[in-house]
Image 1 (tube, rainbow, N blue to C red):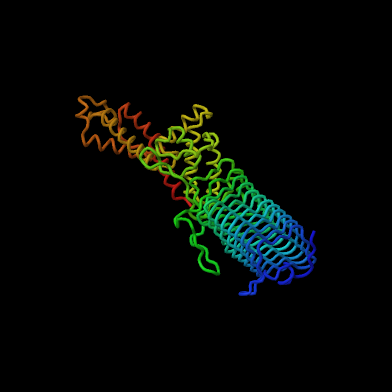
Image 2 (image 1 turned 60 degrees about the horizontal axis):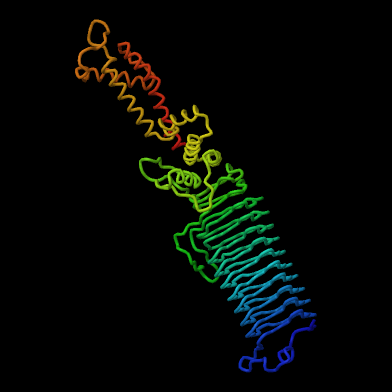
Length: 508
């Protein structure tokens, strides 16, 4: 093991006078190898220009490590290195990969303005102080996994050209992710946020599978498809779509995504939604089945849900993605419903009815009765199609659907009302209104002769009074009496269903 004390001089520390560039008076070297080297104080490599690789595996620096403005033309390896103080990589440039496998830094780690053309990797790394990546640029993949950041961690104005992985990483203090741009997938699966965290990201794919938040978190996103499957939320976590691009001290962030690409939440399965707030996000593809405390989910702003296909065959309403999948599988995908993604299990109505019920309650608790109406309709649809529901109950629900759309479609109830009124008027004209004699007598003669304006007016008066439970006071035949009795029961019910449907859409 080599032992180097203090700061290396430009002339002797490398053992070669030719390492200093006479035109810039800056130290230069080909490959720099410090495998298992030991620096008893600080190790300074400020401004070094290394045309080859920088290798420091298992090196030990008891003081601070300085690579301020250092340029490495090849790879940089710090595997199993230990730094007793701070590590400065401010404005350092690495043309190849930068590996920090099992690296331990007891002080702060500063990567301000760092540029890595290859893939930077921190696997099982440990930082005892604060970590700052502000202004860093990584052209390849950023891989930080199973690492521990004891202090504050900040990634502001960071740009990542490939995927960024923070899986199984522990952040013990405050975390500020962003504003940052990740052109690939931003994967924070399995990470643990023990302090307050803020994530401001521009990315196309954002994953929080089994991520744990032990404190409050605010996620402000652009263009991302967010997967929250099995995430653990111990405190309130809000996810909001940002309408405008992020702005940093260097100006507006350049976004490599279509301007109209929405923020989408694609799954909340396994999440305890009691602490989840979604604002202005697209839920068209979101899978809700399996979410815990879904009735406590808060949806704010304009949260888009999938809708039933257009056309007279289907009632316009908001639906769940899971119902879309079930109906597409049932019909073979030929009627406009969205089929399930490949490999996704299609759920049956018995599973989806409670999901609709809980979402309906969430809207009702938020005093949004009109918003809850579609989820009540979906719940009843799933009950109607559930083969496990008793036949009599299904028949009753089907009649409720046919007559008034579960008390939510006023047009359907009014249509049946007008049809019933027309049928009653016709029946009374033909058989109910007696012919003109000293006493009530059943009409006779051809049916066409019974369809007169006078008999129509009498029949209409009877029907209109029947709708509001009143007797018209009109003498009727025996048949007419029974027709009136039937209409006084059925037609007010249809009128009530129409009123109920209107109220459900305007109630606050």
